[in-house]
Length: 220
Image (cartoon, rainbow, N blue to C red):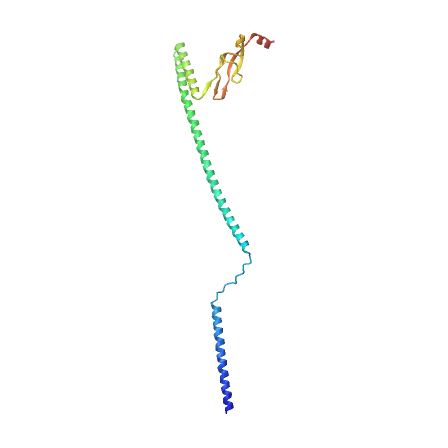
């Protein structure tokens, strides 16, 4: 009896130890399951194998590229603005030049109107049988009005008679024998020459004096 009792006691103790061991094992498994359930399902991060100086160079490169893009964008903006301002300035200057040309043209035409008036008066006097003196006066006034109009436009007559012959200003169409002191002098004028500023509009057509000796040599 004591043997069986002892055996039962040992069996009971073994059963209790096994149950205690199972309970401890189950508790650990439960904790492990909870820990696994609480971890997020995220991919495993790869370790960064680049050296720090490589990352710094890459960052500087990206910053430089960004700065270059900003500078290029600003340059294009300034270029477009400058082109627009240049076009506007050119258009404004062209308009100013056109307005000036039209204004000068109108002033010149207005200065010629008195010439036309005098010509009409001379024509009316001739048609009505007016005296030659009256017609001549009308022609003189017409010439004076025309010269005033030319002067207002900046046109100056070239002085010829009594001046030394200048091939840049005079065109010799005839010669005449003169005293030695008048050699190369303009004796008379067939048509007056004019210039506008430094620009020669037309040379004066003149007669030039030559000594008899030089004329005779030229003829021979």
